[in-house]
Length: 442
Ligand code: ARG
Image (tube, rainbow, N blue to C red):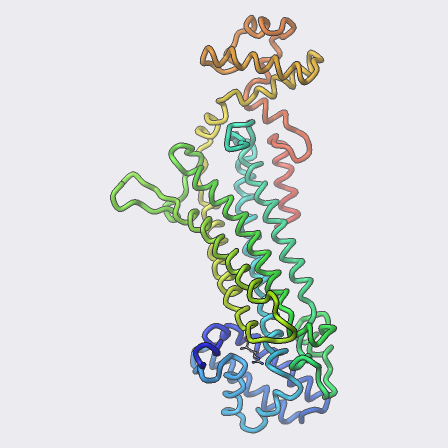
């Protein structure tokens, strides 16, 4: 029973929040005249001693005391004697654990936000350096149109920006303080829930005592936010894996984030990126684990809810590592601009630019222009050359009105420079987007 029942093995992580919650509770009990101020002073003194013991690794956590709440309370009794017995007045472990865990998750959201921000900063920095570096843009992983590498990186900055807004939302939805809900029905003592809520940094006490002890939405919000974030990280990780392969050779990851092979001396394996990609499964698994644990639970507290903590702790550790690895990989990667440009300048990537030129300069309907451009691509293909290698006579053989101005739009540089619409890939737009992203996110 002890082994299945105890949570101290993992909920010891909540020690700071548990002590903080007890301090606020005891202070409120004293100012409401529920306990004496001398008892409160003793409780506060004892809690500070325990805080030091735990911080210095001198505290003995006991499995037979089940969880962090009872471990702290039992030690308090050893340290200060009978006054310790008054701390649990007008409180239950049900509102206590909900409060401690919610405080912890709120802090974790703050850490997550700054870790995501650090990755955004690394991406923005590279985007600024590569505002005009040309790379192939893909759809279906087929060569589509030339883009700038900076523009591509800023797409991830946007994704991460939405992740941070989910972090903010999750924090905003976790403003109700459960403390004072007691076991589930509220308390017969004249407690002041507003003072404990504000002492702990919450905006208000939770409105319904039953909901207060049954609610783990704050943990689900955290995990759901994390799950979407890891999907984003996995996409970037996958691109790093592709880009750093010999076939692409767009970037070179630093030695620190690659490993060699035990038998193939030439190998540089992007292990860190692969692991970030894989950890997505684990974080989505954490979200699933908690959703399933809570599904169908009757109100109010059931012991099932003790299973809420490990998935959240696992996700925090996983994300802290994945984000740190990503940030360093992005900051350290060396971009091979030549090979990116070479890869972009193939496969008739400016065929759309040619069609657009026919529309804008010769007034052709887009459908006809598309057809003319397609015929020219076939000619070039038959000769094994690029569009800009065709002679003016060859262009005219397909459409008589084409003149030498067409040559100016067929290079990849001209193509990206022309994409000046808002949010587009032209180097000028990307430089603008870099400054805007700095203002919005950093
Ligand atoms: N260790 C428990 C948990 O983490 C604390 C709350 C226990 N409450 C109870 N009535 N047994 O959920």
